[in-house]
Structure formats: C-alpha cells, structure tokens
Image (cartoon, rainbow, N blue to C red):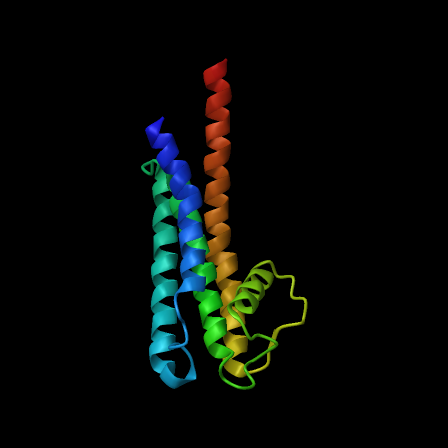
Length: 167
C-alpha cells in the first residue's frame, strides 16, 4: 500500500513541482542577453529529456521498469516547461513572438502548439521562434507520442491484469 501511495504521490507531485518551479524561479536571465547559454541550456535539456524518455520506454517495453508512468509523465511535463521557458526567453527579443508577454502566455502557447491547435493570438514572427516551433512539433511527434503510447500500454496491461486477477 505504501508503494502505491508513493507512486501516486510521484505521479501527481512531479508535474506539480515542475510547474510551481516554472512560475517561482526567475527566468529573466535567459534570452537575448545570454543567447549562447540559453541555446545550449535549451538543447541540453531537450536532449536529456528525450534520452530519458526513450530509456523509460525501452525499460517499459522490456518489462524491467516497475513504475514507468510517473517517470514518463515527469519527462513529458519537463518538455512542456523547457519549451515554455524557451518561448518566454525568445519573447524578449523584439519581433520573435507576437503576443507573448508572460509565463502564462508562454505555457499557453506551448500547450496550444503541442496540441497542434494554434489559435493565432500568439504566433512566431521571427526565424528563431519559427525554428523552435517546428522543433517542438517534431519533438511532440517523436518523443511525446512515444511516451504517451508507452503510458497507454502500461495502463492497458495493468487493466487486463486486474481483470484476469479478479477472475
């Protein structure tokens, strides 16, 4: 029972901690004044998140991961925060992102882009912003879809096991 409580606490707590950190940590250092560091941090974090996600999916597929759902969800939320931070940083460069001014705007734009809805109220105007949006779309297709597919597989497998255990 303790193990299950720990899993659910991690499942809910990890994304909450990431989002609270996103809103609590000052991110003004990232942007045009420190563009090289900003781009290196962005690339490094996306690489680490992508590799972590692929590792979890591999462990889940081989049956060696005990609780992949919290880890996969944490990694997916991590990508959300990384892209939001990148958009916020790019919004400080005039002409890059039209309509994006706050952390909430950046998170909103990231979610809307991830869902491929694109309302048009915030849009990339500069070349760097357009590249990051394209990268986010590719990242979503490759990594996030893989993670969600793995999560779906975990849920389905456990549901089948519960039904079989009851019978």
